[in-house]
Amino acid sequence: MDTQPHETPTPEVAVAPAVDKPAETVEPDESKAIEAAEEAEELVAEHPDADPEEDAVAPLDRPAKSIEGRRVAIGVDVGGSGIKAAAVDLDTGELISERHRVLTPQPSVPAAVIASIARIVRRIGQEVQLAPDTAVGVGFPGVITGGVTRTAANVDAGWLDFDADAAMERVLGRPVHLINDADAAGVAEMRFGAGVGRRGTVFLITLGTGTGSALFYDGMLVPNLELGHMEIRGRDAERRSAAAARIRRGLSWKAWSADLDEHLVAIERLFWPQLFIIGGGVSKRADKFVPRLTVRAEVIPAKLLNDAGIVGAAMAADERERAAS
Ligand code: BGC
Image (cartoon, rainbow, N blue to C red; front, side, top):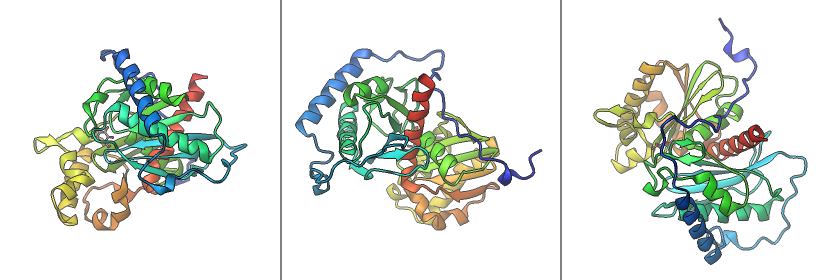
């Protein structure tokens, strides 16, 4: 038995393989992806800037930064309220472009979201010298199998059974790989953040618009775990445990901690993890709720905070590209 878990070498963090499609899934309608891609291209042509409202995206007055010798991918994190992206150094987890954030278009239909991503990626290409085949990883708040978005709890229903990898590749002109957003954040935390060197069963729980979950065993990801939707008190658990639930319901930190605790205790009863890592913007306020949690496992805040989703998505894209070549 491993009695010194902290002294064992860091396991190589592995990203879920792309060939994870269950036997019976609806084949995505190819024309939907083409239509959305064409609509996205029109939107970008109308408004080529990352965010036409902000001065910060005025044309750059300096040449794109050289990234020679560095392994780089672009990471994008699509959330219920914002889309964030940057170029990522894959060996250090460092962001090597500006970190961009624009509001998630409402309604968050595929064409509008893809157009926003295309604008930001274009902007990043003005900041750093990307190779034409630099891959783009997109963390998305839903189940992804084989590049197809399967659920859409906090985004527009147009994403259901949508061939997102194909539509985005068409618009971005680069290899694109989607990954569940919590899985992306988990991969980054295990490699560069709070999970480094942590073996056994580790859960990353992201608290945002919804509640995301990523399960690792000895550093190996089990993809698409949807514990935000386990049933507690007759409803999806994320309706009470997500960070947005505290604000929506006007709860004190104490009251919300009790709701979150109920969710974590239910997960613990089923999976017995050694460690919970709490991610999402709210992890900055860990002092407000972590001391109130009653689970037996250790609970620590994520380290990469809002960058985890970006970094992990970039890592996943790179790993899949390498697996495919
Ligand atoms: C989605 C998950 C996602 C989580 C966090 C949930 O509603 O079903 O796939 O990881 O929200 O965004």
